[in-house]
Image 1 (cartoon, rainbow, N blue to C red):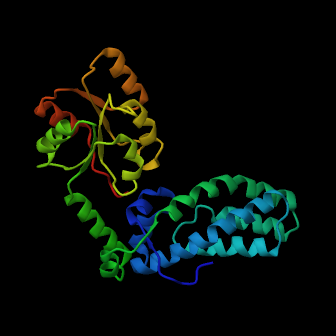
Image 2 (tube, rainbow, N blue to C red):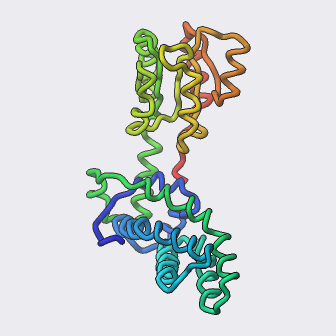
Image 3 (cartoon, rainbow, N blue to C red):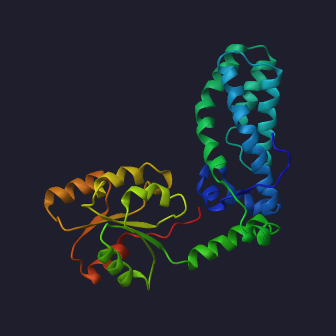
Length: 279
């Protein structure tokens, strides 16, 4: 359980978690960002126990300790303005109190899998404290979100270009740096490591590279939830119909044939790149 120690969360990730309802909660809640993070810390500590408690009721093995865990979780979710699972928890508890094990198991079974999917993204949003956390943590949650919205609206969109050719990467940077924040990666095998510290709004991928090609990178990118819909544009010298059809089939958004025309590259990026909204 949480001992009250202050923890921090990636608020944009929480805002994108629709079921958590953070933005709507912030409109009416009278608490600071720090207080919200503290409540989330308590939630993330309790959630695995609640998941186990639900499974115990599914197995008709619930007891008073499991009941207390579900009741505490229901109260905590209510305090966070997220009542998605609260009726289900109370239905389990009510059936248990009435001695109806079959009904308690039925209600637990209805939500156990969905709850097990609900809380891991919140736990994954934990991160180390940043300077702006100390500066803004005492702000009302709504004001903290407003500042994030303003920062998002003003920031340069991020492009990650992956190509084993330094010349191509230099050319891409020269063409795009005035409009976008361009990062370059000459070693495609390091993509996963780079994505742990960088969040691109669009990918530019070379097709033919040693060790791993652009086609093989697409499933890696799409396997990460935050990049399910992020645009991917191929830079390729093989502009054949078969190659391009295969690229689109894997999830690429478009292609640019090398050597590329700077205006064509700019136009295609502008067509596909999308500023992420803090939902």
